[in-house]
Image (tube, rainbow, N blue to C red; front, side, top):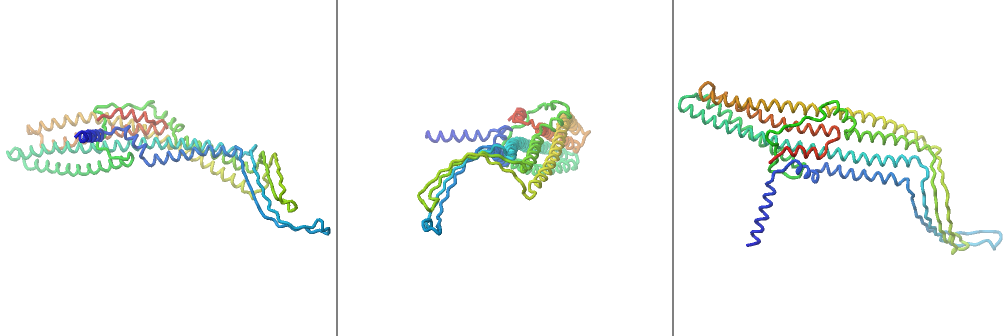
Length: 439
């Protein structure tokens, strides 16, 4: 009995947890642990982090151990029989060598490139994180918009149902024509079709959110009633555009790519430069003489090795020209990144400003539409308005409410896009929007 009660309590607790509405931060946390694009970006950053030790390795000493064993048949002929002899030797050689680069311009450039490639990996991961923020937020608000659409359609359908019943009663008592009933029935049928389409759209939006966060929530926190959306700070589009041209993560990554391309030119030109290495080795040999197969020799050496390239079939010159062309390409891509970032910031800023204006206008329109509906209902009751006037007023009110909710969502998304365009979008911005949501 006690086990049954415990199992019931656990099951109830799990059901209660599942029944809790999902907020934006919880959706974001779920996406960070599930989304395949984000996990791919994380793995790419871990891979790029290895470019730094790989670049450093060419500046550090290297140690190699080599050994060999062979069999030699030798024959020495001479006019003096004392010097003529034949024999078999099995020489064995063992050598350990340490090599420390002292000067190699290409190695220095390769080390610098490794640091920059690691930095690019970090920047690209930040870009992936911001993209995840935007994708989760967009999918989240798409679901809310689809839910709102169904709610408004159902409310409109309920109001039309009442209007249809009223038209039928008035027709039965002879105070209205059959036209009113037909008009109300037509609106009811149209709303039913719209409800089916809206329900299908909601299922699609829920599935799109599930693709990102790994689960299909039954309920989401919604925007609190009567919230006030804030304007961007600073309230100057040129300042946002300027910040985007320098702080956008795509621009930063492309700047690093230009620096890498410049180092690639220098690294290829180093193919003409001499290199200097310090070398220390110890060689142990045994049985290298056919005269004395058991003899051994040990040789220790320390010295410098200078390498001067003379001719490589014009390969170095060709690689330099290739690197210069790629540097020009990287510079052009940097200009493109700056322009795209500036355009994205301008578009998002104007989207926020336009959205705020739309929200304000639609809030006023909602009040006016509600007043118009009440007036038409009263006019219909006293006979100065017909049924179609009431139906039109109802449709206008619910369309306004739907558009108002959508305008708020779009404004919030554009505010996030504005932050992302300047490279300043963080989880605290998502938390700020999450504070506007309630169960």
